[in-house]
Amino acid sequence: MKKEGKPRDHNLLLKAFRVYLQFVNSGLYFRREHMVGVEKVPIDGTPLVIVSNHQNCMNDPLSVAMNLTDRRINFIARANVFKNPIAGRFLRKLGLLPAYRMSYDGYASVAKNRATLDAAGQALCDGESVMLFPEAGHQDKRWLGTFKIAYLKIAFDAAEKFNFEHDVMILPSCNHYSNYFHARTDMLIRFGDPISLKPFYEEYKAEPRVTMLKINEIVREKIKELMLHIDDLEHYDQIDFLRETGYGRKYAIEHGFNFNYLPSRLLSDQKLVSALQEATKEHPEEMEQVYADTAEYADGLKKLHIRDWLFIRKTRWTSALLRALGLLILLPLFIVSIIPTGLLFLIPKIFLKAWIKDEMFYSSFHVGVSVFVSVPICFILPTILLWVFLNFWWALGYMVAFPFMFVLAWNYMRLFWKFIGTCIYLDRRNRPVINKLRDLRTSIYERLDNLLK
Image 1 (cartoon, helix red, strand yellow):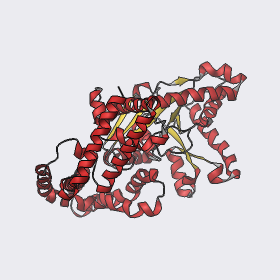
Image 2 (cartoon, helix red, strand yellow):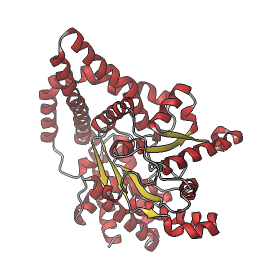
Image 3 (tube, helix red, strand yellow):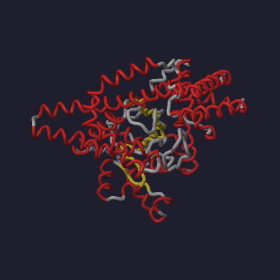
C-alpha cells in the first residue's frame, strides 16, 4: 500500500514564469476571466482529476493553471509539442505530460503512454491534480465530443496504489469563450460538483471497464450541463449566429439575464439554444425557413462588411460624426500607445496564416508568440534599457503604463472599425440592401418570438 504524498512545489524560477504567463494571458490577452464554482474545487492535497471540454487549444489548460494557483496541476498534452528536447524538458517542468496517439505518432509510440499514465498516477498519489481533455482533441464548435476513458484509468490506478482506502475525485469543468479568435474578449471556467470514486471501488474491482464506462457517461453529462452544447450540427452556424447577435441579446434581456456578463450570458445561451432545438423538432418546416433566412441575413452582413449591432439602435450620421470626433481627439494618445505596443499586433499576424492551418489554434498562437517574442521585445527589453540608460523610475513608469497603452491602442482600433462600419451602413448607395436586410431581420425575430413561445 502506498502512503498519501505531499504535492510538489514549483521552484522560484517556475513561479516567476507563472507570474509572467499570468500577466500576458490574464492581463493582456483576455479582457476578463471568470471563475464560477471555484468553491466546489476540493482542497489542495486531494488526489484530483480535472476533466473538461476542449474548445481552444492551449488557452484551455493555461487559463485553468493561471487561476487555480493554490495547487500543482499536471496536464496531459499532445506528444508532438515535446519534440524539441529543450522545449520538452521545459514543458515537463511546467507539469505537462505527453500523450501519444496512433494517428499522429505511429503505433510504436503508443506504448510510451504507459510512462505518462504512471507519472500522472504518481502525481495523484502525491495529492496533486491532473487535468485531461477526454475528447482527445479540441473541437471547432461549441459542442462536446465523445470521451476516452484514460482519465479514469489514471484515477483508479492511483486508488489501487492506495489499496482503495483513499478517495480520488473527478472534477467536471468547462471552458467557455465569448470569442475564440480575438484578444481582449472574455473567457469563463465553470466547475461542477466533484464526483467521488470511492462509492465505485467495489464495482470497479469486479468489472473495471464496465464501471469506467458508466462513470465516463456520468462525467460527460455533467460537463455537457456546464457548457454551451449545440446538438443540432446541421443548423449550427445559424443557431450560433442568432445567439451571438441581436436576437441573443434580446432573448437574454427578456429572460432576466445580463448579455454583457459572460457567466449570465452562458445561462441565457443555454436556454435559447435549447428552445431553438426544441422548436426545430416541433415546427421543422417553419424553423427550416427561419434558418435559411438567417443564413441569408448573415451572408448579407458579411458582404457589406457590417455587423448586426448597427440595426439594434437607430444609427444616424450624428453617431458617425461623434465617433470621428472621438477618433480625432484620441489620435495623439493612439500614436503614443501604438509605437511601443504595435509589434504585439503585427508579429502574430505576420506568421499566423503561414504557420497555422487550424483556426482553433489562432488564439493559442497569439498568446505563445506574445509570451516568447512580442512581450519580451515590446515590454521587457525597453524596461531594461530605460533602467540602464535613464533610471529606475523611468523603467517603472514604462512598466505601469504599458498595459494601459496596449488596451488603449486595441480599443482605438475597435472604435475605428466601428466608425467604418457605421459609414458603410449609412452610405446611400447601400440603402436598398440595408433596408432589405433590416426587413429580413425583423421578419426572423418576429417568427422566432412566435415559434419559441
